[in-house]
Image 1: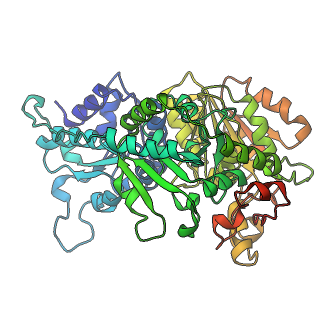
Image 2: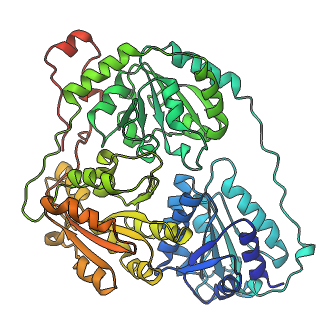
Image 3: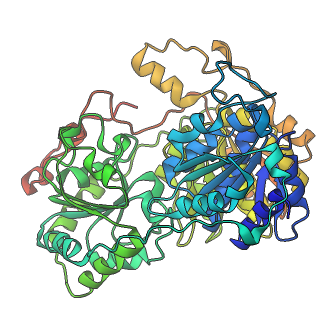
Amino acid sequence: MKLSSYVIDFLANKGVTQVFGMSGGAAVHLLDSVSKNPAIDFTCSQHEQSAAISADGYARLTGKLGVAITTSGPGATNLLTGTCCSFYDSVPTLMLTGQVASHRLKGNLDIRQRGFQETDVVSIFETVTKYAVQLKKPEDIRYCLEKAYHMAFEGRPGTVLIDIPDDFQRAEIDPETLVGFTPDPPPKPDLDAPVYKIMERFFAAERPAVILGGGLKTPECGHDIAALCEKLGAPVLSSWAAVDLLPHNHPFKIGSFGVYAPRIGNYVVQNADFLLCLGSRLSQNLTGGILPSFARAAEIAMIDISAGEMDKFDGFGISVKHRVAARMEDALPIIDSYAEKNHPDFEQWHGYIAQWKARFGGENYDPVPNPGTVNAYQFIDALSEFVPEKEAIFADTGGNLTWTCNAFQFKRGQRLHSAWNNTPMGYSLPAAIGAAAAEPDEAFTCLIGDGGLMVCLPELATVVKHQMKLRIFLFNNHGHGIQKQTLETWLGANYVGVHEPSGLAFTNFPAVASSMGLKTITIDDPAKMQAQLQEVYAEAGPVFVNVEINPEQRLYPVLKFGAALEDQLPALDDEVLEEEMVIPKYNG
């Protein structure tokens, strides 16, 4: 049996239905085998970076292994950005890279390159993969595949890579003689006692809060989070990666908190006396840069698959008193069982929050009147009405992501996907392509900024080629808005390379989309926005929507650089609540 066919058969037997990539001299045998396997389809990307990201989107949507195949050298190195997205967000993906023939590898020779397009891929990728290996002989292929697959899903999921020399891909092997990989049995820690201890402290608190993180989604924990939160009875905060886990009308949903979050979330986290963090690593975007000020009065408990994410605060000002290293699907049933037997009474705590909401809950989302534009927050609010239940939404980085996380009203079952921790421009379109390839009969919503679309603009051709059911919304503010805001804060608005007057080059996006064969709509009038959105969501095939956003619209609220979260908060005191409260405004 040809080795490349063995590789593809292995993936098909694991339930993989799609691979993504680009053809190249050192990958032709792998792609030839894909074309001959009826169980797997190939989606040809326009750039290898997009291939890795499409594999990421496929994995996030399906829970299956996402796979990208590329040639050696530049084909392989172009996978790096998408590989980082999957690695940092715990998404199981496999990068299969072709390599020069084994007899052309430089080995230990003191030269930079021996074979044409030879690159030491393993050394480049080993810090952003769970397992990276170059096949040393054809007979090792079963072992490498089985270990890679196991590592991709084991513990905290992530990316794996196998680099396969060209002559090995076309080698004949006997599958019956291959040696497999046998993983060590996973540890079975006794979670009942430490989780029960956390829950005892949680229900003994006066002002507890629950923090939901992305670890509940990658992988999907398989638990009814909304029902669990009702049993816990406490206010629920979330990282951006988890803003979709509760519907907008859940009685205990507060929303996000941190640097780019509405005030109420920060009021709650900073005045809580106990924080139960589920699958959240408490990134700096949540804690703010001044760590000792975070959760100033709270006892903190973290349950996360990675002990390192809980230990990283030691000596840096945040005290995590309770730490349980566990997968969410193992810990949540224990929490649920404990909550089932308790009847919390946090009425006074909810009363404080209700007063905060009444007084300060409506963020002043300035409409920023400007002819020919719509307000980003108002657009997201309107979009919420039209995105169907259970539809997946893919968002890029920058303003479109911030506006979405702060203003979108999620329905039960909807999922928001983004590259939360690597956050490259140009993520959402190829990721949505990965989802559409996985489920060609389903429709998906894709949100992207003009800067992000420039990075992956050719992938519009991929959408048209396969007539994918994507609604692509371009947030067109004619510049890198979040960078403009950064330069205003740090460098006196000395703009460099952030909009066209400062050197950035854009194109006529609607004209380009139309020339590629996409139905194109421009939304630039608030009075027509509802009718146009109705038209978009009546479309069966791909549609490109150019949403004109005022270039001067900023992201707010945002914590001023150098300020602690506690500096933005009122005291937790009935008298203060009843009297005039002076709260420093966010700098935005």
